[in-house]
Length: 160
Image 1 (cartoon, helix red, strand yellow):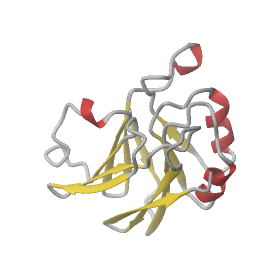
Image 2 (tube, helix red, strand yellow):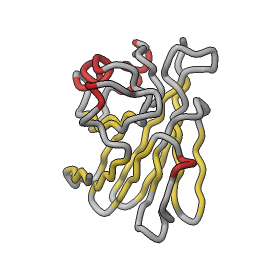
Image 3 (cartoon, helix red, strand yellow):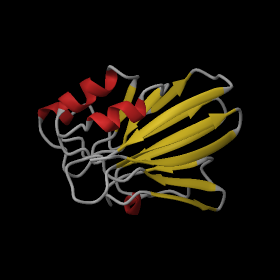
């Protein structure tokens, strides 16, 4: 599925993943002001998406731990188009079955590993916000700043 969003000069995308049924108040606060929130899977329960929708519109993909009736309308992958920028979203980057640069994607957003990372390969931004769930590893989210045709990401470590 392709989601087209309003083209404007500045766009802020909040990126969260691996909540596993727990939405930390610090994560919600860090996502305030986002134009869109992307949840990169392992949501845990539908109430997580409902709570995020209070902050901003939400786009989510299904993770390997998301199953049941409530997940049937959540895709495994998603394409987001913001102006000229294409983002590819999936839960596990190891399951990427295309060459992002050749397909025209500027960023690949994933979760799964619970380890936050920002990496650039062949001109493509690979972003994993880490886990914002109930784990011992430090909780984190990411913010993706789009300004005209530029794309920058930052990790936000949460106090949890």
